Image 1: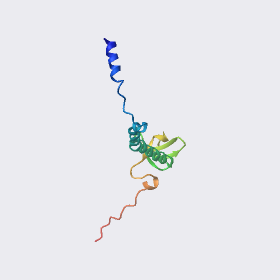
Image 2: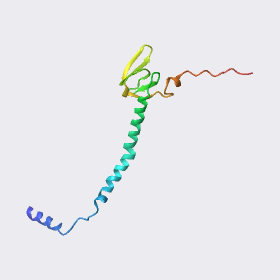
Image 3: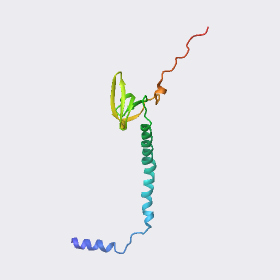
Image 4: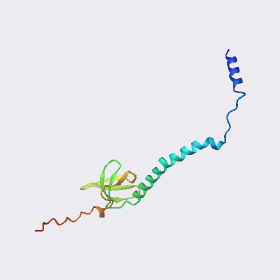
Length: 125
């Protein structure tokens, strides 16, 4: 019985041929999907990585930064792979350079963090 079914199934498809299209037309949807992934996922991630690497290369003593773990500190020493951060009075920690997430909000360098001169608030009468 199984042999008869298998034989019948083999016979029914023998007269029909699959529609033939060019190989490029079959790949067109895959190429289109890859292009969408490139512009929506891959390219923005590459830009973000490049910007982060440029920020790490530009680190200098006095910059105020935040680590990936959320520790705020002031750069005290920059070495090849290690950055020393002052996080409080007489408290210095060493962190991996790659763990620096970015500059603290409000300014990237010590020059930008200098206190502003208070405005003259005298009332004129």
